[in-house]
Amino acid sequence: MNKIKNKLYDLIQDQKQESFTDPNRATDEEALGIMISQYFEWQGEKIYNTSYYAFEDSNFHTFNEQFENIWDKEKEIKKIA
Image (cartoon, rainbow, N blue to C red; front, side, top):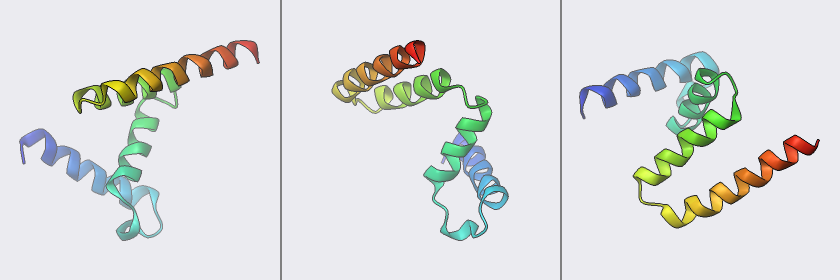
C-alpha cells in the first residue's frame, strides 16, 4: 500500500469507530461514504462529482454517461420543486 492509501485506511477505521455501534460489522464502503458526505457537508453536487471521477478513473465510461443523465434529471427536479 502506498502512503495515501495507508492514511485513508486509518481514517476509515476511525470513522467506523465513531459512526457505528458495531464497527467490526461496518464496511469500508459505508465508512468512506459517510466520510465523503460529511467532508462535503452533504452537498450533493460535490458528492456526485467525487463519485463521477471515481467511476471515470475505473473506466466506467458508459455507466458515467447514464449517471450524468440521472444527475441532470435530479437537478431539474430540485429546481422545479
